[in-house]
Length: 192
Image (tube, rainbow, N blue to C red):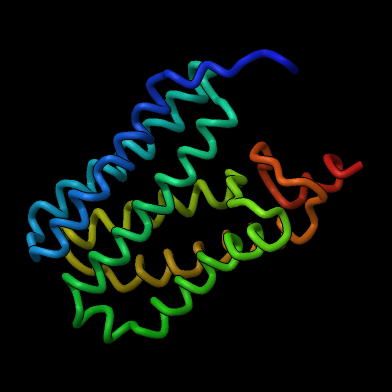
């Protein structure tokens, strides 16, 4: 409701805040090459990422603040997962360097576009982006816990590319930055 103050102290926001607080410990695990600690922390971050959104939707605890906090925590988790690959799995990254560079470029493009166009970081929460987050999370979790599966790696890359392209298109089409956009195909109705 307009004018009503958001209740920002809730379980989903606490889980997102945990993911942010875990970032220095993830950095420490990477800096000390403690792969075991890294796997535990990144796995917890991935699980809490699933839980915060699920709890927010089921118990109607979604807030604009929560969407932004979740996006920042997602970005931190993504960067730490990427850093974990770069520093703890150097050979794998070297073998797939083009895929990693392409993934990073596609991931950061919407953030750059949002900063240029809207002067702030976006937090769109598109369905494709959420699905891709789960696909990426499963890849990261299974890779570090069980090993590399080539078919799933390429599936994850394709899904990521589709989601990042949709996110980029949405930002180009949007007249104002909003976090409640579920698909670029719904923007026509919203922009009227």
